[in-house]
Length: 302
Ligand SMILES: Nc1ncnc2c1ncn2[C@@H]1O[C@H](COP(=O)(O)OP(=O)(O)OP(=O)(O)O)[C@@H](O)[C@H]1O
Image 1 (cartoon, rainbow, N blue to C red):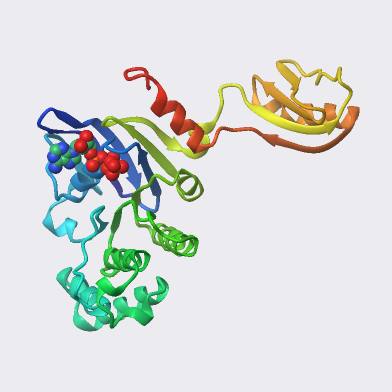
Image 2: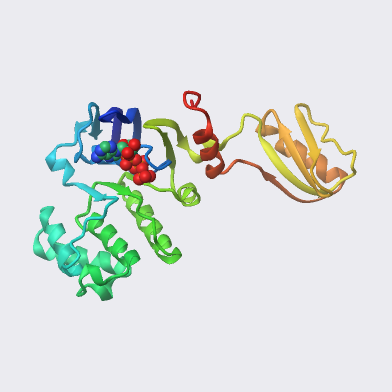
C-alpha cells in the first residue's frame, strides 16, 4: 500500500531546532492527526512534506519516490496562513486553482460546483472571498485543497474557528477522502475531534515525535481499569486473581486488573453480589495523554 513516509527530518532556523529527527508514516486511506503545543514543529513538518520548505536532512517520500514538482501538484494543501485571493470570486478562484493543477476547464468547473455544494458555499460562488465570514472562507480554503482531486491531503489546522456544523461537514469530507484511499494528515489543537476522527495520531513536542500510534494503542493502560456502578456490600471483593477493587462512592467502584481478560469474571462476580447498572473501561482521553506526555520534563518523554 502506498504511504507518505517522513523519515528522520531535521530543520533548524538559526538557533531554533524546529524539527529534531522526526519520523512517521501515513498510509494511503489513513487519517493521521498531528498534535502538539504551539511552536512544537507541526507546520514546519507539513511544509517540508509538501515540498515548499527544505529540510536540513531527512527525506519525505510518497509511494517510495521523493516529492518532486509533479508529485507536489498532486497534494492538496491547506496552509496555516490561508492562501486565497481576497478580491477574487469564490467560483472563479476555485476554477483557476484547479486549472493551475492541470485540469481542463470543464472538469475544473464541475469540481468547483461539486465542492462548493458539499461544503455549503454554493450560494457564495459569485461573491469575492473577502465578503465571506472567516468560517466560510475556511470552507472555500478546504475546497481549494480538494478541487484538483489530490492524491494526498496535508491540512494545517483545518478545523480552527469553524462552527459545529462546519466541523461536522469537514469531518465527513476528510473521512470520505480517506475512504477513497487518500492519506490525510492534519494538525489540530482540538484533541476530542482528533480522537474521534483519526486512525492514528502523532504527538510532537519541541520538534520530536514523543508518541504515535492508534488512539486505543496510545491510551491503553499497563493495568486496565474499569468503573463499576452497582449496589454491592461495602466489603465486596471481586475474588478474581490479580484484580483489586476500591469503592469510590456509595455505588461507584474502581476496578484494576493485571490483564483486560479479567473483565468478564469481574462482572460476573459483581452481578452475583448485587445489582449492576454499568461496567465500563476507564481509559485516559487523548487530552489526558497529551497533558501527560507534554508535561513530562524534557528528555523524559519516550
Ligand atoms: N521562518 C521561521 N524563522 C524562524 N523560526 C521559525 C520559522 N518558522 C518557524 N520557526 C520556529 O520553529 C518552531 C516550530 O514552529 P512551527 O510553526 O512549525 O510550530 P507549530 O507546531 O506549527 O506551532 P502552532 O501550533 O503555533 O502553529 C518554533 O519555535 C518557531 O518559532
